[in-house]
Length: 292
Image 1: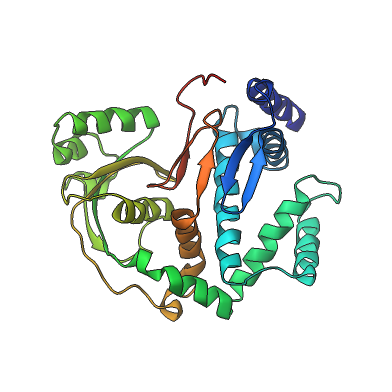
Image 2: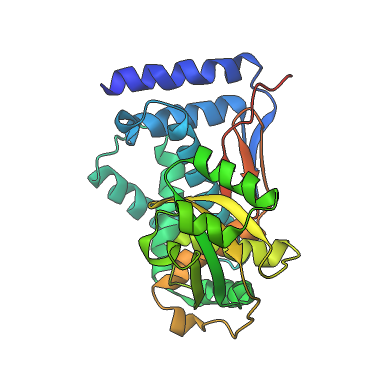
């Protein structure tokens, strides 16, 4: 079964590879990969990961998303001198081998950098605290939102088009939202502190608050995919607050560092693979064929 899905991914990426592999395909902070390297990474991560559950490009989009998030985190931590030592890398390699990775795996070198960075981040040392405090202002808002939750990207796109064409957001939420709690209330979720929503939802709202000229009650973002489906999110109120301190953030500090990293790193992606949405912090599927 794994062999079949490895073949599937190779076939999917053949068209991209045929366009050449010398140019940069992805850049995240200090890290860049050309097309050949990125193709190899997608194939290997799809093969060693959970590719058996996926039969389309979702697997490559997920692998690229993971690559961006981890490389962004490594880059942000490096700014604050949180850099793995040789001993840290050795420990990370031992952890990965214990978890089933093979010594000759072509993904091992990059993964042990990620694992060692996570290990250091989870120690919550002074460098990690400095990284958090330097970016905590990005979480200096309560999240005051409404949303419409649907099952597919197509449904979400259609509803966004309806909103943009003048349809009433609350009426659409009452009619179409699959969130039984908020849907009957016109999608309203009230104002909550950071950490109350799933990370994808929170990252999208914080990204919009930082990068867009938000008009309360009018600014709509999405689709935002989470474990629950696809969200269309309206920002209802601007409510600046004092962000949680490093101590108050506790275990959520690491997730917030990932959010901060994708909000502050320079990220670019070859359109053949998709597009990086810096507002919601997600890789979107390619819009169509791309000419050389």
